[in-house]
Length: 56
Image (cartoon, rainbow, N blue to C red):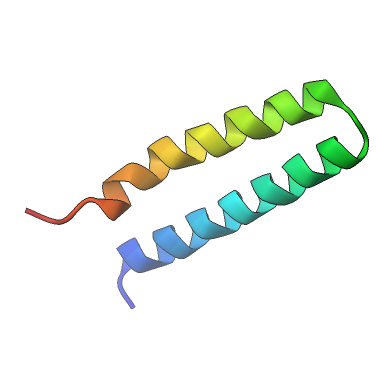
């Protein structure tokens, strides 16, 4: 496997942890944690963008 694939799989792990973080914040009704989880997931989306666009 190449380095790019390993980075992508690591990023998927970050997204999954963000989703767990989000679910825990909803269960505990903690809006600060919810906001942090949303910011985390948006940042992961920006980070993932170069991996999802086709190579030129």
